Length: 207
Image (cartoon, rainbow, N blue to C red; front, side, top):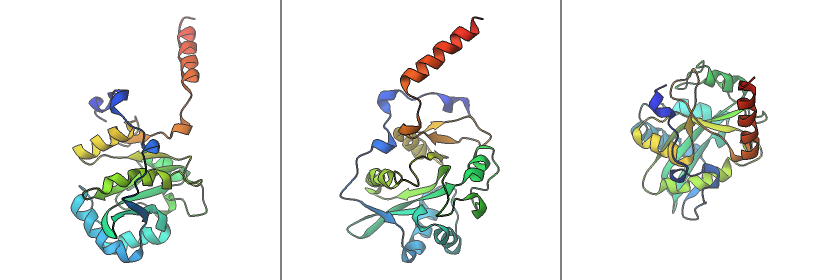
């Protein structure tokens, strides 16, 4: 991981993904099977480094249809975001760089009846006003099954990195190179607890 990525962005320049306003203009909903061909083409064209076939995408769609969300306006498809809902094994594999993120093993993904340990932003592609629907995506990810899981991502371009910064993601130290994490607000330690831990650390250091 490059050291310059560890610089913290000034708080005023950041927003919080879970606090983004929803949009009545952009419709965000789970993808339909009939849209997979268009989504495959869009992903391969718009997301750097992505090369996936429609049968491959359908395999993950069949495993969990709610892992792919589409953005549309007036019934016109504008984009999509695909997630890997990782189980505890998958979460560890992500942190320790033991997962093939191009063709992830289904055994590392949480089934629809399993708890989700982490959410990996697999790909996001959009045209025009599609990104205005990110607040609607946040609402989807606040469902009980998804609410406790932090988000992880690899920015694949300068624009992707800027988006990660804007949404409150930060690079973390892990064996997985250039891995960024968004910690859900309800998972963060309260400020008074952080201050207490810092004070305790200084006190321990004096002894």
